[in-house]
Length: 123
Image (cartoon, rainbow, N blue to C red; front, side, top):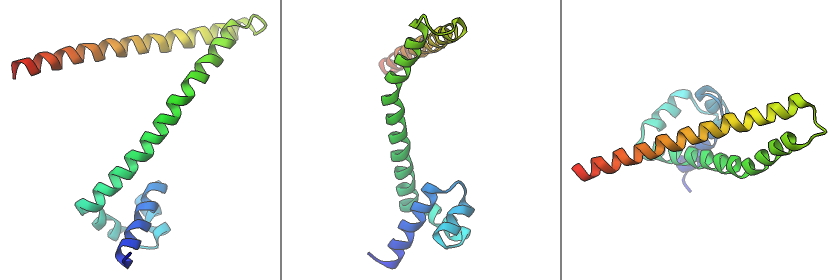
């Protein structure tokens, strides 16, 4: 691996773990200007975007895998008659609020799909 490739890898890691370009530059021990130049290069920018998307996808998968447990916890709070009435009511409200949002989103997605299908038939 060339020095340039090692530097780019170092910058990529710094960009993925820093909150700002300035922090990334400091972490990678290079200038902010160099980072901006790298980000203007299509190959580097594509690598950065792909790596960032992989991280976001991993976070989303982790959240999805925790949702069942979270829902079970809320349902348990709601059903447990030993809990305070306000806690049970709050859990029930949470289920209703999020359930309604899900139903609304599902409806919007279905309508969007029908519109896309109709548009595809026209074309």
